[in-house]
Length: 164
Image 1: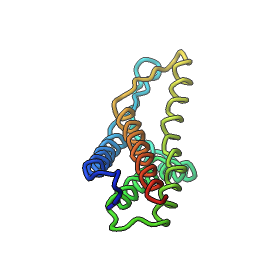
Image 2 (image 1 turned 90 degrees about the vertical axis):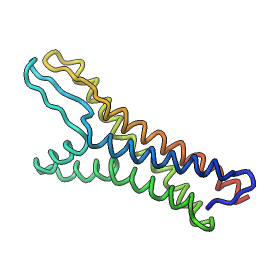
Image 3 (image 1 turned 135 degrees about the horizontal axis):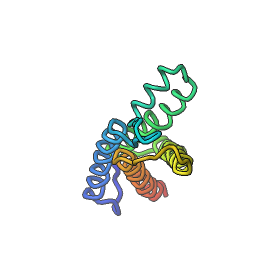
């Protein structure tokens, strides 16, 4: 566990709680529908991140499947698990600090999915034959990523102070 005079055990517990919350929001966010696309007033298609990935696989869009799976599913899960390990490790060393800096810099790519969805929304809203209804899955997913980014930033700050 991080052992800094300025880092209290309640703060580590709070960061751990936030990681648990983030993982819960993440899992719920990728399973629940993120939007419903209505075409020509009667054709509706609701999808979640996981159902969109399944559709990509079925349509043989393997490259997109791999990219979105890595950036939107695997990277956030790995980031949360690594942060949890760093917070609860018996020691903290330069390896952990370098790993934390790495996930801090590359973890932002998990927001790529939210950006792609936002661009899709703008494109569809501009069309006259389709409409989009946003569902809470998108908000849960985005909240999970943002919480994880905040925990990463705070943990990195703690580790950098410890390294000095």
